View 1 (tube, rainbow, N blue to C red):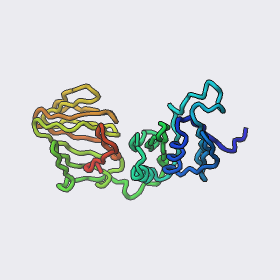
View 2: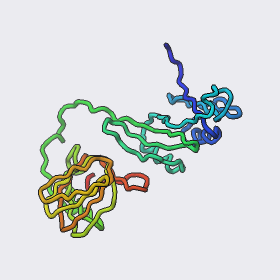
View 3: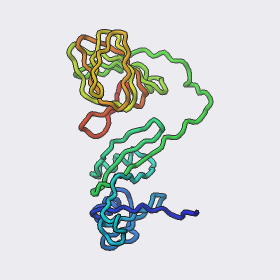
View 4: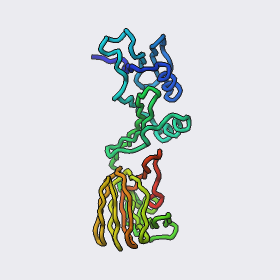
Length: 260
């Protein structure tokens, strides 16, 4: 079998709405069109898209009322961050914020007016073996006041981070006053907390645990958590350096400045 081109046929309620979305935001062009039909293409390697109006008689009877739900139109692009910023600025709905999977896939999703999910993807370059560089040496990092971030609920003092000599991990300390409670949030990477003074009460995914002095807590990636200090408390935290935070009910992600 020799495949010369690939086409994705989507049955939608409003052909004109999907055609306008794909042409306006994703650079598709109309190759052919008629009432209840549009054939779209791009000049690169993107799959061609055919849009058919729901109920059209060109489809077999058992398929006429089925719509394009439960599938994802995935397009691999370069400079994913720029594409996300461009679509957001153009008013396209970002229905899944930019994220990175452990296997190296970076992606975000937008959705057209008919509910067709379009996923833009960028793959991280595989690690390449290389000779040991001059930077691959043991380092001693001294805490500095410039690496301290004070929020209404806690004080974070950055230790190791890529800006201070580490390659993969970030570590910092957290100090909280008695009664302080941080906001609900999730983090895209696993975190490990070791309580070095006092105690913390941590609610994660609907479950609350008290973490006492000397105990270590592992917080999985992407689960909503809230940290509360029933007494003055301090902890040491470690995480992969590229982790970002999200707040339920809001779009986008937030960097952790003390981990950069």
